[in-house]
Image 1 (tube, rainbow, N blue to C red):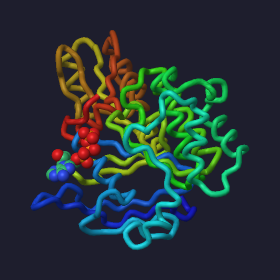
Image 2 (cartoon, rainbow, N blue to C red):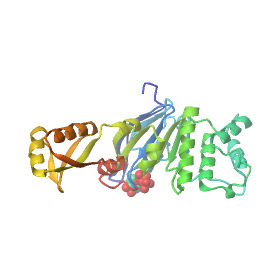
Image 3 (tube, rainbow, N blue to C red):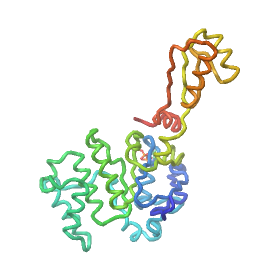
Image 4 (cartoon, rainbow, N blue to C red):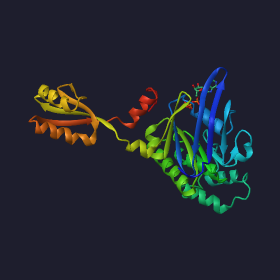
Length: 306
Ligand SMILES: Nc1ncnc2c1ncn2[C@@H]1O[C@H](COP(=O)(O)OP(=O)(O)OP(=O)(O)O)[C@@H](O)[C@H]1O
């Protein structure tokens, strides 16, 4: 991405006692992107986020937000950040609207129109005058988003925003997060331990495991990688077919009464044609591909909890 980063994380480290929890994370975040911070429980997501927003001191490294260092120029750097780190505090017996007005008092020069615009942005216009205690958890989270947007941040940091939500609530939050990023050109940094959720919400995903950022990829690229498939050919006579195929495709194996090849999808017709041309009878072709979830399980040594 050629646009100037909103956030620069430079070699961020955290040591507690003799234990290093975060091992030098470096990352740039760009305007309007939704960046997913994915990792199993205990990987270091919350610790990193706490350092990003200055709630915890880093042992080494620097975080620059909109050109200001969180470490050296906290007030100015944090003025560009909105976030939900823990469950947002709301007054349950007040309406959603009155809650927002309450928080808006702390923000200089905020107009009623701006508040209305934010309410629409998070899709709460129909229920905003009802008491928060009547809201679903998803609606409360959206009110939390609205609260975080009041001071027009350029970066929104959300720690596991879908925790505890049902599938409909998760879909809602996902939709609004994407909308906020695109319509307001706000960068959203969102953590989760669920790949399936991140895949649908984010433009890029960074995977953290044992305090290290082990991969950063665009979701689009992840989904479009040339994937190798394991393909089984049910063919007779098997042994003769194996010997013949092996001459041209040395990687072939015999397993469970079938030929097994690890190939790209586009090679399936080539091999099928080869078998038919050599007078073998093909009874079936089946393929298995690794899901992204399985790949991530491998990357995080199986401790990415679903
Ligand atoms: N104050 C502390 N002292 C010692 N170890 C700590 C401290 N805080 C966190 N840790 C350890 O650092 C690691 C990272 O914790 P962190 O809470 O950042 O993980 P996480 O990715 O947010 O996990 P979760 O998804 O469970 O919230 C964990 O192994 C945790 O036990």
